[in-house]
Image (cartoon, rainbow, N blue to C red):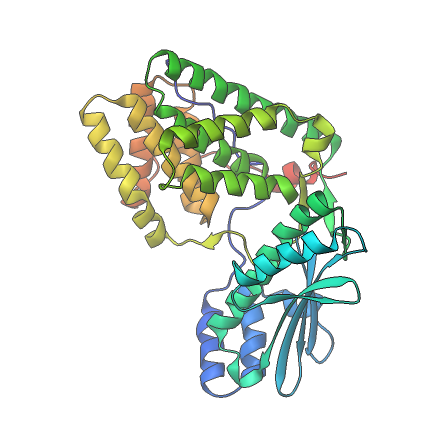
Length: 389
């Protein structure tokens, strides 16, 4: 445990956003000019320029767009906008606990959308006059419906044995890639447990917060779990960052979560690994200026740690900075290339060397300098085609 963590480049095809930034001003201008339908259509172009052609009807008044395990239906009339996401079908059993949970969700975290019950079906629902379809608000509604419906359906199906109203549109990984995911995930967990044991023995167990946080985020970066596993990881990441909970309790809970992952059967674990279509991105759009702002804290923190000779602390601060970027944001290709070059070069190096490599790599991004390390381009077409059955 005298060396830094390993690194593997993501299996995913692209970490870049599909959002077309130039379309945002167009949708705002259309709304300000009272061209409300044009504003909505341009908003869809902002999200993904292929949506209207791929998922809309001929007169562009109805769209049926998949997002993860749900489908979002958008209907535009002469005077109204209606958005519906069919959610769950419930029977006579468990109705009371289901309704109680729905009431909680409708109160919080839902703000503009609501879950409605009709004919033993639950649907996410939002309706408003066209003149109130301000682009910021409608994007937020779509984001709220997509993310909450896609997350909560797994919770309800697992807890209350209800049925989904939509068959998810997914593409399965090949058996070989699923085996790779299984092996890598277990390798990451074993590596984390080894560091945790080492830091506990050295009485520097506070570093285990970093190890657990990095492990959760590198799992997401490398293999991008879906379904309930993604939801569980998101909850655990939030738990690890909850400053109202004592850090020792967060570390304890994080260890238990990793142990639970380690104890899962292969078939159960791998059911949450597949490729699904996404309407509203789970991650934020990230340009270089935002990257620089987000890197300010880990870069400055690690600079101080390097000066004090705390190379373990510096390495972990920098690793967490890089994995935070990949976890929370869709990353521009040039930034991703520089980051992965630094991460791959630092992997397995001594703490001192790793801290220096990662610090130099982050500096190259912040100050827009060429990468000091070799950038290896992946032939995505040939590689990615092997991922599927």
